[in-house]
Amino acid sequence: MARAPSKAEKAKSQTEPGRYGLGDGLYLQITPSGTKSYIYRYKVHGRSRHMGLGSVKDMDLTEARKRAAKARLLVRDGIDPVAEKEAQKQAARQQRERTKTFAECAAVVIAKKTKVAKNAKHIAQWGSTLETYVYPVFGSQPVGTITKHDVLAVLTPIWDDKHETASRIRGRIEAVLDYAKAMGYREGDNPAEWKGNLQPILGSSDKLQRHQPSLPYVGLPLFMADLRKRDGTAALALEFAILCAARSGEVLGATWDEIDLAKKLWVIPATRMKAKREHEVPLTDAAVAVLKAAPRLTDVPYVFPATRGGKLSDMALSMLIRRMNGDEPKFVDGSTGDPIVPHGFRSTFREWAGNETKHGREVIEHALAHSLLNKVEASYHRSTLLPKRIKLMEDWAVYCARKLISESKIVSINQHIDVKTA
Image 1: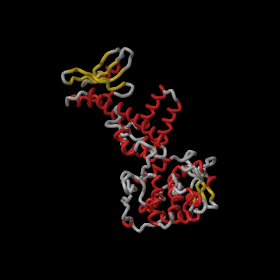
Image 2 (image 1 turned 30 degrees about the vertical axis):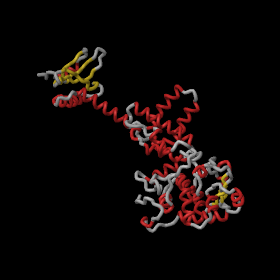
Image 3 (image 1 turned 180 degrees about the vertical axis):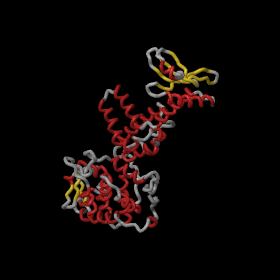
Image 4 (image 1 turned 90 degrees about the vertical axis):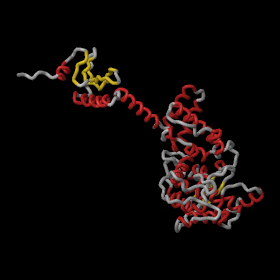
C-alpha cells in the first residue's frame, strides 16, 4: 500500500497562491507571482504575528524548521522574534556607526562642500591638508574615539612654523567632528573647538615665541639608541636633523646638490633658510653615514624622499616620535612633561652645548643659524667660525652616540626625563 504524502510534501507540490501549513507554526507561502518562501506564524502578548524566514531558493525545509524552532523559543520566553531581529539590526547599525573613521566622515564633508563650493582650489586644499597632516595621525581611527590629545598631535608640530595652515586644519577637523556628532557617530564636546579648549594651549598668534617640547639632553643618548634601531627614511631624516642641529624643514627639503661629501659640508641656500641667508653645516662622520644609508630614487632630488617620490612630510617625523613614545610617552619635555616634537631637538642641542661644553656662545648660535644681535660680530664670524663649528658638531655626535651604563645613571640636577623601559 502506497504511503500517503506528508503535509510538507503536499505543501511543496502546491502552485496556487496561498499559505500551506508545515506544522508547529511553519508555513510555505506562495505569492500571486509564484514566489515561494517560508514564514513562521505565532502569537505573543495577545497579538498574532508572522515573520519571514527566507526564500525556498535559499534554504531547504530542514533549515526553515531550525529557524522556526529558534523563533519559537523566543516566543516561549515572551520575546517577539520580529522585534528581536530588528533590535539586532539596529545594534549592528550602531556598531558600524561607531567604527566610522575620521577619513570616511571627512570624505562626506568634502563631497558636500564640493557641491556648493565657489572656489575649487579651497576644496582641494581641504583634501590635501587632511591627507598630509591629519590622516597619518588619526585618519583611520574611529571618529568617536578622537580626543584633544589626538588633535594636538596634529597641530602642535606645525602651529608656529605653519600657523596659517595649522589654523585652517584645526577648523577643518572641527567641521568633520561636528558632522560626526550630528550623525550620531560620536558624543560629547568637539575636541577641536578653539575657544576655551585649544586656545589656552596653543595660543592665538603665530608671532608668539612658544616653547617647543624638547628632550632634556641627559636623555638624548637613550633616545638616539632607540632611534637607530628604527628602519625607514623618516628615522634617517630625524637622526640627520639631530646630528646637524637643523630645522626639520631644512632637512626634509635638502637635495643632493647641496651636499658635498668630499668636503663633508652641507650648504643650505638662502631661499630655504628662515633668516634668508646661506648656511653652511659641517658634516660629521655620523652625519655622512646617515647620508650614505639614505635611499636614492631616480629623478628625485631630495636626500630624504617620500616612498612614492617627492619630499618627505613634517608629519612623518612627528609620527615616528609618536610611535617611539607609545601610549605612555617616555621621551617628554623636562619642564612640562609634554611629548617631545622634532623641532625641540634644537633646544636640546643648545642646552647641552651651553651647559656641558666650553664652546663659545657665538659658535653655538651660528651652528643653529641664529642671527647674532651684534651685526658687526655676526659679519666678522660668518667666515671664521666654521673650524670651531666642526669641532662643536663632532663633540655633539660623540655625545649622541654615548653608551649608557644603565638608565638609572640618567640623572640631572636641573633636568628630568622619564626613562621608563620601553
